[in-house]
Image (cartoon, rainbow, N blue to C red; front, top):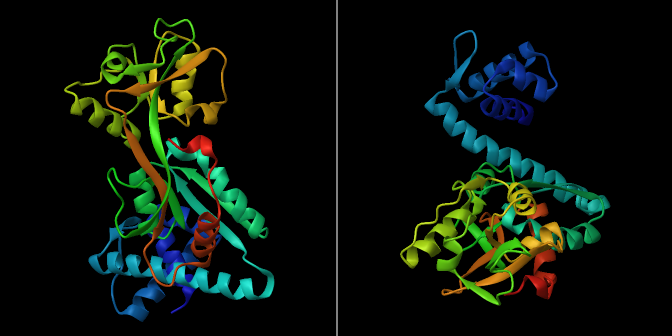
Length: 300
């Protein structure tokens, strides 16, 4: 059994289409199909359901998919470890980051890239649930997400900073001169918020529920860029993490006011698959994070 055959099989399971999988693997479709059949022969099990096209995986195929992902991840780690002995760490560090933590991620990767100049970094903006799936499938080396709210499973956690919340509005808004605003007052505004598939929004919902309120935004978006656009060109307000201004710059026409009653914070941190041995990329990232400090502006 060749590692290449496992790679073809895992790619087919992801693409769910023989022609697309063959294209991703840069081989002809008959070559990919023959490799899958050879894998089935070696393992003495039918792995793929076929009816002139890909239908799905058998129960045995699902088992092989789980093991195959881990074997391929370990094989990649082995090659990276051997390469590091010769010419330093090479390859790609793949990170999943929740949108709210994007302003902080460069402070992690800057040190990593400085210490490992031959390595590349690939950052994906993902929900916390997608980060969990990526870690479980060995498609990510690490993630930056919330640590306590809806915590991820089977991961090592490294706290980075505490996220707090502010109400953002245009400078001419009646509340713009206030030093602080209560959550009850914020709920009464014309709001533009993240949509509910984003964990940040679910955190806001929980805070509101804790004081007996239900938030009802007039506009929702799954992107902070969509929220920023509405703040710039309308009379909307938004409840966002305090790092929002570092993501979009200090726009002179916008004001951010601390939210109180209650004052709520949420831990954000690095998560790594809780596996031993750790991949060289994940190990190098962890070492960089433990040696670095986030700027004070991310502290509550």
